[in-house]
Image 1 (cartoon, rainbow, N blue to C red):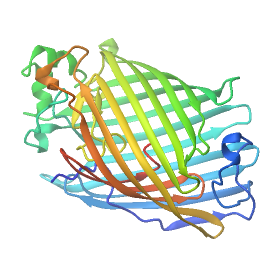
Image 2 (cartoon, rainbow, N blue to C red):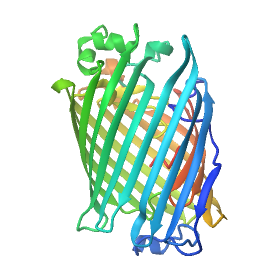
Image 3 (cartoon, helix red, strand yellow):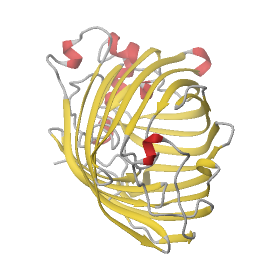
Image 4 (cartoon, one colour):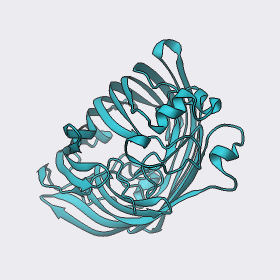
Length: 408
């Protein structure tokens, strides 16, 4: 069986908590959705929370991983969910290579989240990512291949982004605006599947889709209409959270042009108040234009269909469904900060289409759904930090994941 840690960790061990708080209450603004639900133990609305989690792990695909994720947040009764939050992440994977140690994955960023009393919320991020990613080919039935460099490529991309969320006059309705810029350094390995596809040896229709294998800059903008009816942003147990979004980008002197549309529906149903929640997500995506190959939609990820190897299937259209049963088992407090331990059972399913017209050669026939199922553990730390541990099985592999926050 194949481990699919894409780049996830095998272990996350919380060791630091600079916990400054006093008794009180941590409710958000008065709202019918929250009045019947106790979210956390009473907390001081004017408080500061600091949490840091070292990240260490090993898997046979990637190697040894190490790093840290830290979060600092200032809470206030006047602004929901907090006055501000600073999140910092540094993580790298190292393994032996032909010329000594190599780093198949590296991800660092600094993110600053700033809500305001005027209903405007900005999230700014600066970061750098390096990944030896997978390319098994185009379509829902791309073959497994021989693995190794034959189904990989290297991408490095420093970048920056800023997101803006605006309240609309309709309660719980928002507009999301987002802009990002990165520069992509692409290395295509000799004899790889990506090299064959980009050169036309896999067919002219495939080569027309597989673009952007040279170094290039890419700028993107995104606009979305968001309805947020959740009772809590980090640990929702009641309500809905839906989004319609459009995205456009251009790069490489106009040779690359990407357009995309997304619709996502999320539902949270309390089966046993404060104890058991049914969470569901349904998503549809489409990409059009002349996007770089890494902007194509994919399946196989810790936040999409768990258990399917990382970026296993690529296409222009993607359909996805996730169902989770989330149980909150134990609530406890350390140094006046609330913690919750819980478990999750889940089923993920989805598929991609290589293009807008039927292509049995690339996509196969029939439903073609990819399936992943499994379970996991959850540890909620304070009001804004969740550590998740998931194990998943699918006909395509086995995945072990450790990450931050629920997948939706």
